Image 1: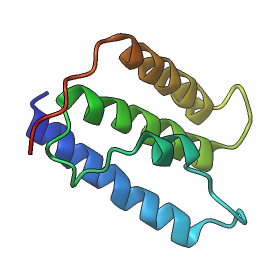
Image 2: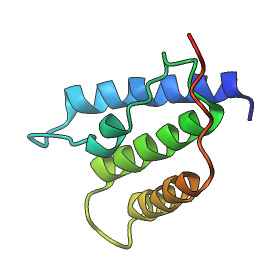
Image 3: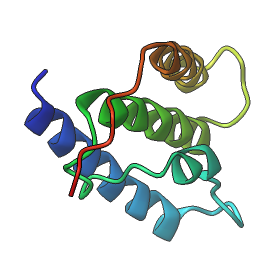
Length: 100
C-alpha cells in the first residue's frame, strides 16, 4: 500500500472513530494508545511506517470499542491481531525526522 493510500485509510478510521464516540452508549470510549502515539492523518510529513502503526493502534481500539470483552468474538480476535501488528511495527527503525 502506498503512503497516500495509507493516509486515506487513516483518515477513514478517524471518521469512524468520531461516529463511535458520538453514538457510543459506553460512558467513555478510550483511545489512549492511539492518542499517545501522536500521529494523525493530517501529519503527512510522518513516515509511512508511523502511519501504518497509527492505523493498527486505531483499528485495535475501534475493535475494542465495538466488540466488548468476549474472547471468542471476531472483534476481539481482530483487536488482538492488530495489537500484535502494532507491536511488530515498533521493532522496525523509525524514519529520521524531516527538517522543516
